[in-house]
Length: 161
Length: 154
Image (cartoon, rainbow over all chains, first blue to last red; front, side, top):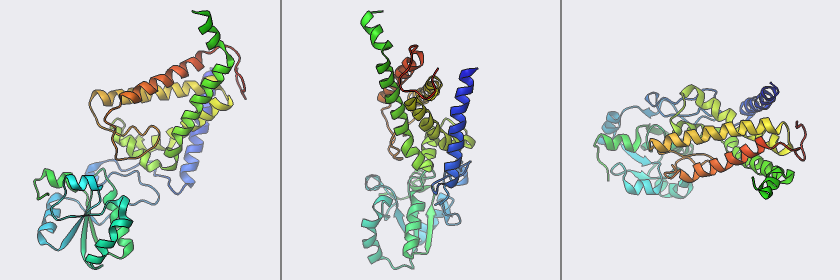
């Protein structure tokens, strides 16, 4: 009995502290996240939630149509190694972690009114959303996020290199 | 049991060292998870073991259980109960790791530093490390002499 009481005290303190910190912290998360890949990109739903709804391209077919139209620049948000191993044919590489270094060449080449599609490694990856957000901050406003990313594209047999 | 070994494990300084080591390990382990709960939640999701509805709650609460139980061990606040909680967590980690090793599921353990996107393909050493911590935890739990530097012990 004594042990049960002591354990309850320690766990109780932990739970109260956890919920309080999560409530006040800017990096706190929702009590229930979005973990269903059929609903889009999975995310814990942070307070400064980066998944931008409304810009997501929900199917590989739609992404392929946009690709074929030739009106969109595809930008790969994954690491350089992943990009080199294989990427959507013709895509630019701007790894999210190296955004500052890689963006200058992109800015020089593409004016702010181009249409962009970002992607990463599918629905468990938020990098394409981060990249879209960074590009938007620079002033690119026509941005879509292809949430099935490279794995979805490759599985469907679309052009890679 | 060998007399020397018995003296060693009955020594209150050894118990204190074990308690501080295990406590500090858990406090250290909680640190980056508390700073980035969203990243930790995604790591839990990556284990592919828990129902979606509990993932965020686990990500919010578990690091604080590690922190509070670790602190409790160090300051000697109900140390036997604190180490029981720590042993329960270690058992849960060992079971989760083992399930994923057995079914060959690639995942990021998220044990200490959380850097999502680097699935660890070789989890054997993690398992051995957790078993070592569990042995320490077992020792602290079973220790019967009086404990040094404790706020509330009995």
